[in-house]
Length: 397
Image (cartoon, rainbow, N blue to C red; front, side):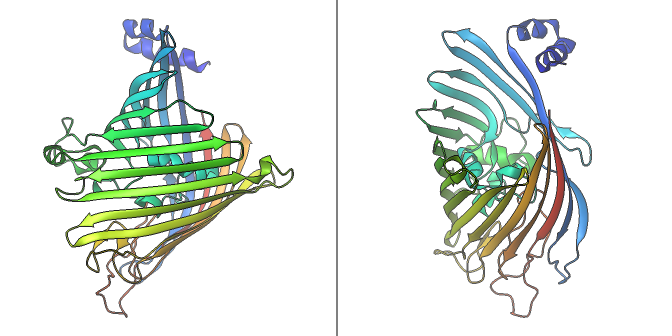
């Protein structure tokens, strides 16, 4: 059945006036189910390193989006996107890219809950063949993707946003986004919600998040830069910022029979802590190669030691100030499309944490030992080095 007709039928089940309005709009239902079987391990607090198996959902979703022409080239737009959990059942309504806005020749303005502009850079260097998700996500180290905004993450889906995206200008686009960090009726105690959305305490201290990007995509070349600032988000006097530049070149578009695509990324992160600044550099290199009708993806990334004026042992997420706090991410995957709507993939990923580093997977994090620190004795159990093998399937609808 046509997706537009299905959407109209759903709207009509709720109210006749809503159905009448939907008839003048272009409304589409969409989604994807992404489930994999994983074998994962990582050193535990007792020093053991057992392999375990689990089934995981990876950014599975169901959504509805629509456009209404307002005349003169101006359109009203909306989207409601919800998280699905096909591994365990259930869903969370409207917790993904959900917004209302206006779009025209001047660009697009939206209000709602969605990812920061920095996330738009991920596809340039990251694991796009496996949809930038699962434990294969290349945002394990980059942008501290496993953390909520309230905990210091920079690749977060924030609430209470205003955003403007420019039109495409000969391959160049830009975006700017502001998150008010207001409570929006959410109780302070509900930390599972306020981590990315805001709360009354951060509202009173005038906390906010500002992010922007610029991306150039023309033929085989892609370039991107992004800046993000968290003002008083983690605390009343704590300001954090992150800067990323990335680029990729697809040799397959200019050299027949040579399908290599290379990507590179550099990131500089700074957190303010009670004892001083905590800084880190990250860089990564990726390659995508067509093989047997599918794609091989390879990635190596390194987050350096924590540095700056903070005291040794100062910690934000997986980042720790001091010696032996670096981490490296290794990854290889293969993805194969059975059809335009069905994808199979497999891969291996490892985070090689130095003894004092505390990083884990971005999507479906795995519990590891994080007790070891710069003041721990040398013979104590080092922190974990999570790794995993995945076999997954995706269906788009």
